[in-house]
Image (cartoon, rainbow over all chains, first blue to last red):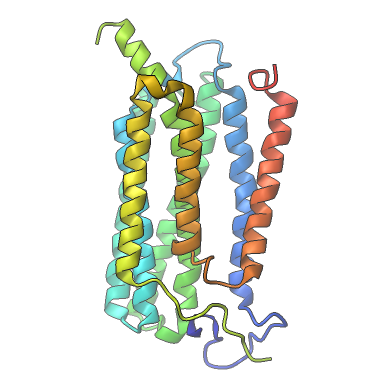
Length: 211
Length: 101
């Protein structure tokens, strides 16, 4: 497939016949699985162990987080459409979909920032309790990954405008896409094991105060 | 050495990608619906895990193109994933008072 053929000349010949940059990205993503896996495990191990509040059910807003989860899912769609565009040689649509992906990623980040500031105003910080520490470390690192991803997307957009992302160089878009989809699947896990599992406790707390 | 094709020509079309995104959105909506059904509380966690695994697999196989790419990429990623599951299991076994009390 042209996406994996070395540009200009065959200096990237490998013994496997696979592009070594793509192998590196997959190996990196495999290792990043372990990174987030240990952070998620730490959150789950300490879940319910905080000695004092605020507790997750007091601050989480499931509908709000559901919207941000949807936004990030749709950004994966725009990313794969961007890759499809450059693989067809459509540089204009590549830029459109890359910008759309960056915008959606930025919307997600904005939502995270708003949520974090809300939590801080409600008394949840890194130092408050086990929930605060594990939550902000996990989601903070995920947000940092998304931020890096947005910068990579914008760099690709700039490179495309400079005429440096052609059809035979679509591997570059593919590599950024792999990274972007990875941050999406990490959020799929975080959304479920951090936020959704607290919904029954949130509803019980609301019922207890007569909402 | 010439590059072998990493995957066949069966790329999903843009409309297929849109359909997959639609499925992902529907699964997310179902997940949110489940957590608000009191009668599903006992099976909520297994259901959510199953649905999340489904979403995870759809993104990895189709958006990340792993289904159509070389098996070596799958080995690299799934290997890391298996190690992750091992690390999680070990951490739970060592430190969790809730899950292994």
